Each structure stands twice: as structure tokens, then as C-alpha cells.
Image 1 (cartoon, rainbow, N blue to C red):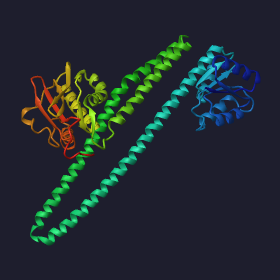
Image 2: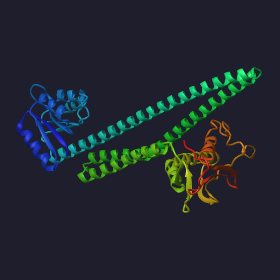
Image 3: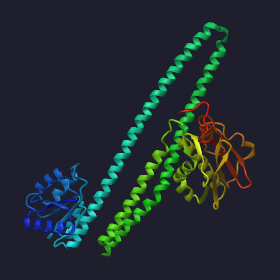
Image 4: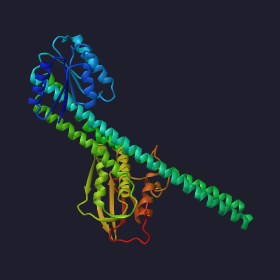
Length: 439
């Protein structure tokens, strides 16, 4: 139920405004104030959705009231519609808008124009409120994620310190038992530290690569709804300019805007869910994880003119970590897209299908890119090895670690006549690994 505050020094005008608004906006609540200071106090206490403000008032005029409301942190977001019977020149209108007003209407105001302006202001207020709520939600999620990362870093520091103490104790005992091996132990100690540093660098680079991929895909997902929102706003302006702005038109435009905003909001939720780490092994649908990965890269592939053909009519249940598995698929799709984009401008294609091989379920990702050079085919899963000029060489290595170490599966690649094909296999849902993994 909208709450509207009308400020005017003439009681008759307040009665007229209240009657019009209650007649054309059923369910609206209209509050009145007979002076500028009284209106400011009510606005601060009640926080209305819209303020209708007369300009010519004794003591404090409408310009000053508008400035003070816009300077107040609690009332600055409230739309203000100025109304005047005398100050209707262009300079007066500019002065009103410069003072912070969102609209300026000359008296006498036609009822349908006043109501249409109030509805527009209400929609603007609702849209701004929704955006602020989304902003606050995102900030809260960022703060929560930051706290989680800080806890993880602290835990890693404790583990590293404990390992370091254990290594120091072991080193002392080894030196006491066999002083002749001191030189060899020193070399081993340095090698362990180098490997640990490389592992930490791999994890960090993998996280940053995933973050960059996520941001890029969000940008692709948001481009179409943002363009559509801009077009709707432009159409509303044109309709208003040519007196075609009807209530039905505004209602439909508002519904379209809400649908697009909800779509953008759901995109953030989808990405947040996708990059949440799995903690324990579980049984999951291969088809579902494939489609979740595809939903994140579909816009990017369309932008690169690459079609995806997915044959998932035959589904298999796999044992492992569903989100980690989808990240492997996402990495393979990203590599396929880059290979195709570097090789051809049109007719790019990626085929995905599901197969059952013994007690394993397998997903095959095939592209019509240039294929993998034969002389490096057996090196592509090595850490820091990449065929790209700016590649990190960690994507396929981390994929191999997830599939083979965490899920007791295997991943392989070979060339075809038209490109390359990657095969990812994991135990089926009824398979019980000897040593279950947790992450």
C-alpha cells in the first residue's frame, strides 16, 4: 500500500489532492502537512513513498523543503513531485529540478497526469529500493565469504606451522642419528618447501582463473537483460513524450522490468551455488551437472557463434563431488571454446554425450577445433604446461587431480578427424570406493 505525503499551505488543495489519489489509487494512504517544517518532520518520521510538494508557501518555500529532504540521509531516496500554479516558467522548473525534485507539474494539474506521475514515481522508488536490497545482499555475501576465507587462511597457517615444527623435530632426530646424511636432508627439506609453494601457487591460480571465468560469464549473462531494460526505459520516455503512456502500458513495462531484474538476480544465485565447494562425496546425476555447467557458459558460447549439441537422454548416476565435477566440465568447455575461436570464425561446434562403461559413467566432450598437437598430447595434464600464449597450465592439471585423486576416476584426451575429444569417467552411483575421499 503506497504511502504519499502532500505538503501545501492551503487546506483546500490538500483535500483535493487526497481525494484524487484515493480515487485513482485505491488502497493508498495519504498524509498531509500544512507547512514546510511540518512536512519535513513527517517525512523523516514516516518515510513516505512519494512527496507532493507545493512551492509557494510562507516561511519555508518548496525549494528549501526539497533541498533539506534530499540532504537528509533518511529521506534523500524519496521521489519528490513539485506542484506550482504561478512558478511555471522554464527557469522555475530548472530551479525546482536543481533543488532535487524528480518531477515538476504546473497547476491546475489534470487528474490523470498527476496520477500517472505518482505511479511513475512509485515505480522508480520500488526499483531503487530493490536495487539497494540487492546491493546490501551482495555486500553481506561478500563479507561472509571474506570471513570464511580468513578462517581458511588461518587454518592453513596453523597447519603449515605444525608441519614446520614436525619437520624441524624430524630433522633434529635425523641429524642425531646420522650426521653424515645432513647434506642430503637439507636438500630434501628445500625440495619439500619448493613443492609446497608450487602447490599453494597452483591452488591460488586455480581460484583466480575460476573467478575470472565467473565474472566473464556473468557479464555475458547480464548483457541481454541490461539491453532490454534500456530499451524499455527508452520506450517509456517515448510513450510519455507522445502522450501514449497509459496505465496498462506502464503496468506491462513494469512487469517486464521486474522479470528482467529477477533474471539477473537469479544469475548471481546460480553462480554462487555453482562455486560453492563440496565437502563430502555423494551420488549425483551426470545430466544435471552437465546442464548446470552449460547454463553458465551458454551466453558466452552464443557470443562466440559456437553451438552446443548435448545428447543426455541416457543419464548415469555418479559417485563423487558434483560441484567439483561441474568445474571440470566447465574447464573443458572453456578450453574447447578458446580452441574453436582461435581456429575458425563460424560453424564452431561442441558435442557432449553420456556413456556407460562397465562400473563407470563417462562424459565425452568433443569439439571441431584444431585438435591437440601430437607432440604435446601426453603433456597436457602436466602442471604449468599450456599450448596457449597466456595460459597458466593449471586447468587440466587441477581437473585431473579432481577426477583421479578425489573421485577415483580417470580423464583422457585424443584427437579425431575434426578436432579433439576429452573423456571424463567416474564410478557409477552404486560403486563403493575402498577409501572414500572428502574435501
